[in-house]
Image (cartoon, rainbow, N blue to C red; front, top):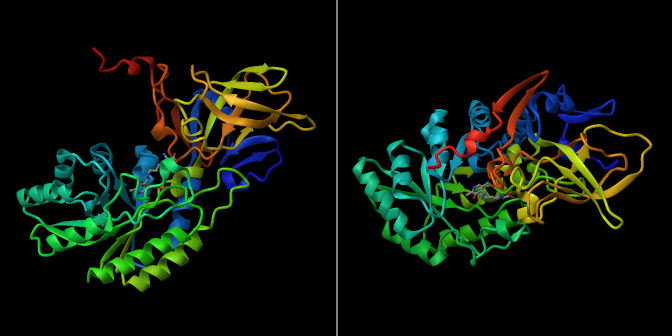
Amino acid sequence: MEENIEVIFNDFFKYKSGKFYAEEKSVEDIAKRYGTPCYLYSYHSLLSRIKKFKEAFNGVNTLICYSVKANSNISILKIIKEQGMGVDVVSGGELRRALLLNFPPNKIVFAGVGKKDEEIELGVKNHIYCFNIENEDEIDIIEKYARMYRRKVICNLRLNLDIDVDTHHYIKTSKKETKFGLDIHSAGNILRKHRNNKYVEIKGFHLHLGSQLKDTPPYTRALDNVKIFCKENNFSPEIIDLGGGFGIPYSSEDRVKDIEDFGVAIKEKIKEIGGKFLILEPGRYIVGNTSVLLCRVLYVKRRQDKNFVITDAGMNDLVRPAFYGSYHTIIPAKKSRGVKYIKADIVGPICETGDYLGKDIEVPDNIKRGDILIVGSAGAYCFSMASNYNSRPRPCEIMVRGTRDFVIRKREAYKDLWKGEL
Ligand code: LLP
């Protein structure tokens, strides 16, 4: 329990006199005021992550496009926009969020393996910066709308370079058995076929390799392969979009390279290739450790061979442990001194055995109904993957800024559950 939690919770979430705080707010006060489960964000933590990321890529011409899928709350997006970043979108819904917030169109990039015609049209009509292409037919559809709206549309080819990465197999996206990207033969064909296209201009490549990558070699290896591909195809890329994937620690034992190290390695390779413009699409790095999920203990079940702590948050609120077997640090809002710790599974109220937030987590022996638990690293792919399973309204989202707190998403009401049903 005395593990070094700073790496996960950073400077903006910490214990003060035994009570856990988000910036200047005690999380117990927040839980009392807004109820649980509740996602709690720190404004200054978000700003500090953005700053660190930008600094790491200083010195090359870079457009940082935050990956909206990680967390699409419009208050978060507004802060991202105020910090001068763009966005990476993968659906008409995400594009509409970006347009709603008036992101400059030339800072919007559109990726995705299955873009619908209407989504492509929306992007072309709104002059977004570029499309990342995953299919030969996709270019024809883009060309159709480019012709209709009389403009030239920038496209980057998403390459599948068959690169393995060390992460959960569900979030590896660059192995050849995954659905993503173009193999180098199709990419070469597309380059030749569309070299002098009046409506579609291929300016470079897109290479999202996977998510939660902890070290730099996959990026440098991929860029080496791009260099070879360019030579073989006699093509000099203007744009290299390396996607996202930059990992974060979820436990104090997680060893993740600093973002500065990613910056150094990537910048060096980009210069070698002669790429003029680097695009990056970080999601998790920006928001992952800027939020915690607060939940309340409903029951403690002690069995001879196993203990369970049943909380009011379940897999519908935070699915990553159930879906990927991911580890999230879980700690109590109040530190108890001089108590024994026991191991327990922290589980939700959903009728599924896979409904858990943590397994074999150390909790104080005196844990009881009503206590607040904090689930760490809950900013990325947590609310954005939440559902209404078991007819449970999704939690509220609160942002703390110094001594003030703001609702950035209301808790869903029961009537929201059947809205639209006939
Ligand atoms: N760009 C593209 C094209 C992507 O597909 C993704 C994430 C990103 C950027 C951002 O990647 P990041 O920097 O966040 O690693 N739900 C999973 C993660 C899925 C990632 C999907 N693509 C999880 O909870 O771990």
